[in-house]
Image (tube, helix red, strand yellow):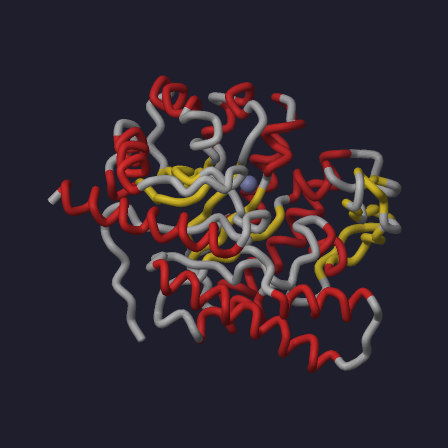
Amino acid sequence: MKYILPDKLPTTVVGSYPRFPEAKKALKLKKDRYSNKEIIEELIQSAIRRVVEDYLEAGIDIISDGEQRREDMAVFFAENIKGFKISGWVRVFDNVYYRKPIIAGRVKWTHEITVKDWKFASTISRGRPVKVTLTGPYTMYDWSYDEYYGDKKEAILDLANALRKEVEHLIAAGAKYIQIDEPALSTHAEKEDIEIEKEALEIIFQGINAKRIVHICYGKLERLFPDILDFPVDQFDLETKNSNFRLLSILKEYSYDKELGLGVIDVHSTRIERVNEIMKDIMKGLEIVPPEKLYVKPDCGLKRLPRDVALAKLKNMVIAAKKVREELQ
Ligand SMILES: [Zn+2]
């Protein structure tokens, strides 16, 4: 089935969606080392199907698999890339536990990590493109204990080479939107890290025929301007609603001319943004880039929201984008 994307203000998501009970059950079975892998796969596919159904109901143009298979964005890739070990469960506060990746050897890609879920989501998306999200090399390094390299640049470039292999397999399967998620860039990166990340993104994206996107959120991204704007990507996917669109005036100052993924939904709040409010926020983005280059989306992944809230927010976002599109005719 062919799906025609709107030529102005396409709507999209960052990646994660609230985890459906099927996905929770699959993760639990995996944690308990349950041996019947087919059952786990069926549960994950049911969860992805429900994510895609919600996106279709909301009317999102460029969707994702909702990251239903991922325990978290770093551990999932660490479990699937050679060279990593995973720590035991660490208590952060109250009843929140997490595991941390440990780099214990040379990092190497050995098998497809995201292709299967991308393919499955694509077969049920009624022609809508499915974006793939990969946790970026900087964030993977920053969120891991390095017991092997002791050299940040060497580790990050090896991670980039591993992700490059994954991207090649995704492209061969037909993926057209590849997003590298780098939340650690805005919180921990220093100016000198920007050169390393630029080299890493060149490794990941060089010569590929797909939309090259980098997602960065929260923290103080402006510290890294304007150097970061030279990244070899087509699109910056940013968190803007939560920070009251502070970054936009800075982008304007540097004559930003790439595509912009504009966050108009605050994923840290359960308040459902009104259609009029989202329309006004979209207009703020249009002061920076033309409607052909503006992608309308939430600030970040939706995984921490209740599912009914996430769906209601997406529905209003799609209505608002449509209304602004009509006004632009
Ligand atoms: Zn994010």
